[in-house]
Image (cartoon, rainbow, N blue to C red; front, side, top):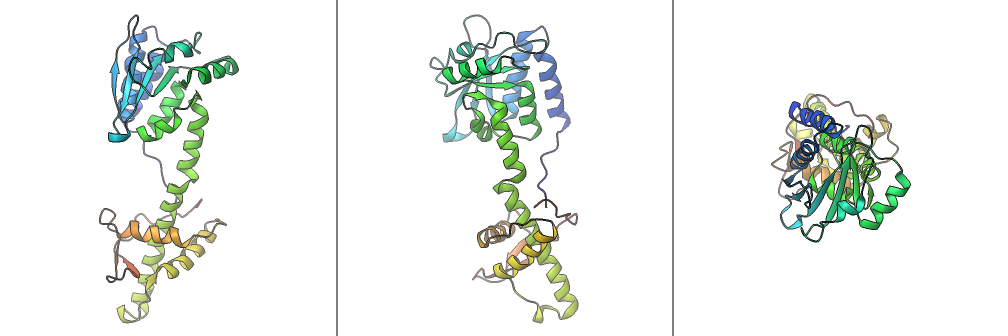
Length: 269
C-alpha cells in the first residue's frame, strides 16, 4: 500500500505563497521573516535579526540533545540571486555557535563556481522551491539536518524524496498494510468455513506466504523478509496502532482486530 505524503493544508500553502512572493519582492526583511517562519514550521525555533553587521537570523532545531543551530542568510532577486555570497553566509557561524550555515534565495546561476564557494565555506544553498518542497512533505528538523551538507540542498532533497517514496519506512508501511489486509481476509474466510475452532494461526511464517503472494500481485519482485514481517507484527500490535493483538503471551501469532479502511489498493510495493 503506498504511503501517502502529508496533505498540504491551507496554513502551509499560505506560507509557501508568502515565501515565493517575498523572495522576488522589494522588501528583504519580509523575505527574512518568511524564511524564519518556514524554519519554525519545519521544527525549529527561529530568531530574526537582520540589519547591518548582523546575520539575517538563525534557527535552532527543537530536537532535545540532538539539537543544532543553522545560520540563515537570505537573498532576494527577481529571478536569481545576483550575489550569492557563500562567505557572508558563513561569516557569523562561530560568533553564534552554529553548526551549519544556509544561503536562501529564489534561484542561483553560475552553479559550478558557486558550488566551489559553498564547499569552501561549508554552506548549504537552498532555493525557495527547496523550502517549499520541505514544507509540502512535512519534513522534520531531523531530516533537514541530513540536507545541511556543503553544496546545493536540491541534490540531497532528491535523496530524501526517494527515501520517502521507496525507502525503508515506505517498505515497512507497505508490508504492514499487506499483513493487516491478508490477516483480515484470512479471518473472514475462517469465520465462513469453520469458526474459531478451525481458524489457522496467523504466524510470521503464514504472513510471509500471504504477503509474498500479495506483493507479486502488486507487481513487486522483492519478497518480504522475516524481519520485515516481524516488525509489521510489532507495529500492528502496538497500542498506539491498535490494529492487532497477540493470541497469547508467547507472541507466536496475532489476530487482526480492525480492518484496513478504506480497502487498500496495494500498488507500487
